[in-house]
Amino acid sequence: MEEVEGKKEFQIDLGNLMACNPHHHFPSIPSSREELVKECLQKGTELAQALADAVFNLPATEDVDGPIVQLPTPTTRLPRQKHLPKPKPPTKWELSARKKGKPLHKETKKEKIAYDEKSGAWKRTYGYDRANDEDHVPIIEAKPTDEPGEDPFAKRRTDKKQRVEKQEKNRLRNLKEAAKAGALPSHVQLAAMALPITGSQAAPKKLSKSELAEVAGAAATSTASIGKFDQKLPGEKPLKNKGKNRKFLPVAEGRGMGSQEKEQTEKILNKLISKHSHDALNVDKAVRKINVQKERRKTSKQDKSSSSTLRKLKPKTKSLKKSNKGSSKKGPSKSKLSKLS
Image (tube, rainbow, N blue to C red):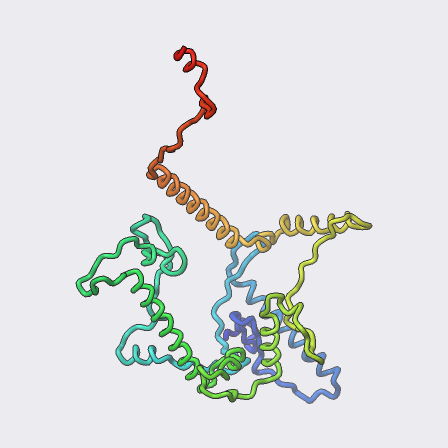
């Protein structure tokens, strides 16, 4: 808080855009509500004017929309509206890592892009088309520990399947421990009633009406028709979390259709030509779309080149059929008859 020059009774916090007068007091109790409102409006006007003067005294930078002022850090600590969130219970792996002093996944920063030595390009570290993918290796080097006659590719697939099953088992165990601590959201709490998570058919806690409605709406819209053609129960209310349908102009021109189409195009042009047109365009989405198109073109070219090389390497087989043109099974030809005569 800083005091305004000439008005020491005002304290201003520019970080929160807040002004107050802690030394103010009424000399006498107002006789009516009108006097109280009038006094409050007068003091509020003075505070707003002092706050505006302090803001305009800050150094400003010019921008397209006008002068911009960088506010200082707030000095007044405001109370929270809601209680502090409960910390998630640590998993079994996190507990063992802390005991051994190993860094957690959140503490170690993993790079999103890695260099692929085989293709000579930068690719994703994990996920589809990642760098140094084991599944794309055509030859696996034998190790002295390998058993004779064992297929290394089949062994790799079985090991991966076992790892996935182990991760799923650990996930269910972590959900079970989190359900005991009461740190699960509403849609997972209903799933926690199943046997593999909690081991009992009883709900971990009583759910509110809004949570049940949220879960019921999510379950109703998870069908192929998004709940449109599902059979409704007697007394069932319509879905509240139904998505919005896009409205298109009719294909056949009718009465007033030209004006509607004109208004629609004018709205789009006004958005693009307006002062805040940069807000209407999603530049990140456009860049991502261009990058995806480039990757698709690159992969299609690689596929074409590989198919052409395979065609060149394929040996050409000669046809074994003999041409029977000019010959007939009925008898010898005229030239043969002339020779015989």
